[in-house]
Image (tube, rainbow, N blue to C red; front, side):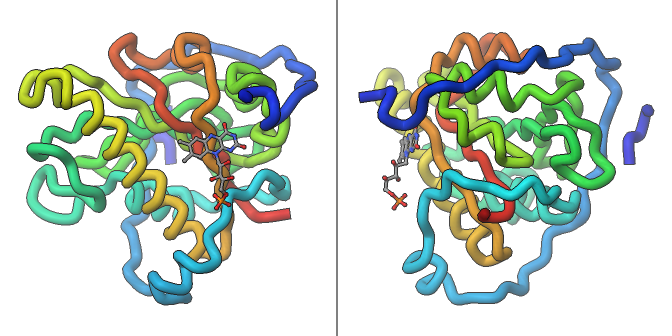
Length: 227
Ligand SMILES: Cc1cc2nc3c(=O)[nH]c(=O)nc-3n(C[C@H](O)[C@H](O)[C@H](O)COP(=O)(O)O)c2cc1C
């Protein structure tokens, strides 16, 4: 698939493993399978059974499952820009990154991948299994690192504040919440599970994952098969 080749109550005691962090060529791009619109349950039932899950099996996801989840979170639904979630002034200030663990997704090497909604593909930002780094930066919420994949939702405030000034920052946060709920409902329908994490040292996560300076981590959603 590669074209080119209070806070501490949530968890303590993560032993940080040394994570391989390798620079990768910028042209590593992975095409994603198209989304499907058939599901197992009604939205009302998905809302009823949705929970924050903090325990996952090591079972990998398929690329199709990851694609479906990313599309649900921030995928294109109409025209070149309109997406699954609303956006103040259609400014779309968010970016989604998939932190894929070793054997986290079949046929996809461990690494950090940027989801590009317009192309519906992934661009690799960094190679290596960085889940323990993210869990460590989330105040050692050890459970996070069990999940085969984490979705990091980042916000670039300037994309919205140029239009709405200070109020734009609120809008960015609201939109991130919309993305999170879409992901929750999607994984529920797919027979998978997700957690949600807001407690984190954002600069550490951004640096470890190799994200652009302007992409402020807002939420992390570990996901996979529920244990
Ligand atoms: C913005 C936000 C931040 C959160 N941060 C964390 C977190 O860092 N760690 C965690 O385990 N749960 C976190 N949660 C999950 C809440 O603890 C959880 O939603 C709440 O206990 C209600 O449970 P439920 O989601 O299963 O209904 C967060 C939820 C939200 C909305």
